[in-house]
Image (cartoon, rainbow, N blue to C red; front, side):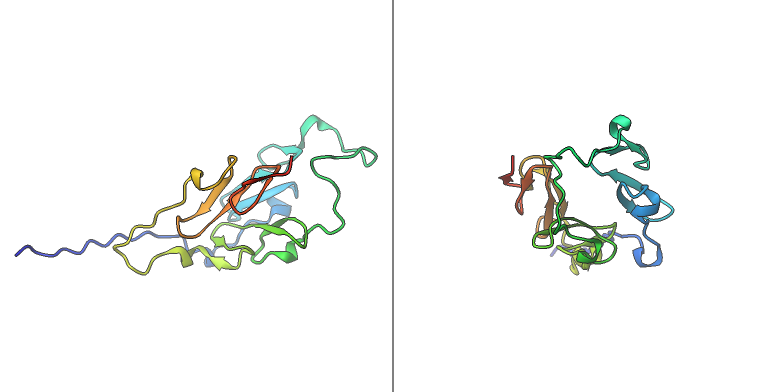
Length: 165
């Protein structure tokens, strides 16, 4: 009879609760999403801003209130940071919010910790989702069993399958 061997692989996540998350208003000049901790972060700039800390307006001009912005219309019912948990950033409307979660957080409203994705069976592999899980160049975040798609501008739906253009 052959011998059974147990191989244990530990996939570690940083102790996110002991680190302070970066603040988008301070770290990214209020013009982008801050991803990471106060000590180690990067900025994903909002449309119309660029630079390492989203400090530069694209084209260097201020938007005119008189001109209509077809891509980003002013919405009176836009969602707010209060619509997301754990310092998530909300984009969309109050009726249809979409939360962009900080490092270590997942869920529709950033309510869960990434540690909830870990499998209690140490022999089971964790398979991350792939770009093909989302349509129209959407960005897949999570695992094959539990993921969300961050859609490109102009697309909606759980898998970015609907075009708004």
